[in-house]
Length: 116
Length: 113
Image (cartoon, rainbow over all chains, first blue to last red; front, side, top):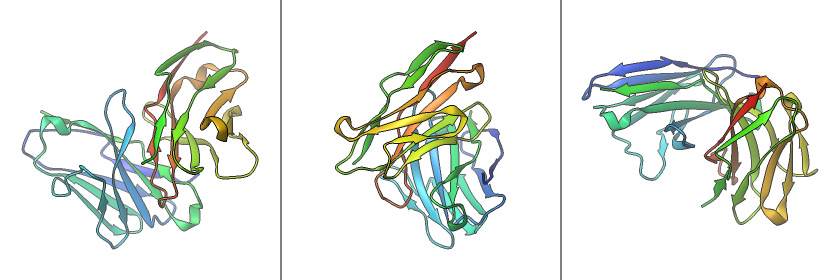
């Protein structure tokens, strides 16, 4: 199957700082990338959908000014958590879809964010 | 809006025993249905999917799932569980909204030797 990577795999930051998480499709062009958030013992909650070259579409209740998403190329999307606070600590997962991979989206391994 | 319910938070089975993980969905029509497995340090891996046609779907690693429209269910089964199957399993639905998935809360599977 197709491969999606995330970097970093874990990050610890101080409250008030910003953190950028990268999501890359390694062997296919990802027209669409999705960002999810997963709390411990909870489901994955879709945060936003990003299409290459377009503004991201955020789900209801997700602050677009806090979670900045950029999908500038067909292989890279970034999620920036701005002015992070302890309540932003979570597991962030991206997935990617492209025409070449058919009707399946492929998931990255996730990024564990801890805000002190 | 669609929703997905996985009633079992944690299931423990012995190696070699059969397994069934339950999934119920709420949606007006038949959505696309998926089962994923999540292992520590790994991305979610697709086990199988149902779009239409034969309601018994075969997947990877010996898993199968059956779509039952009358029960709005898509239960995952495996006849003989291996220790390597220990992981978290998620059921998900796509209600035709451009690959946007709604996930259940997951079922953690523990396999005893």
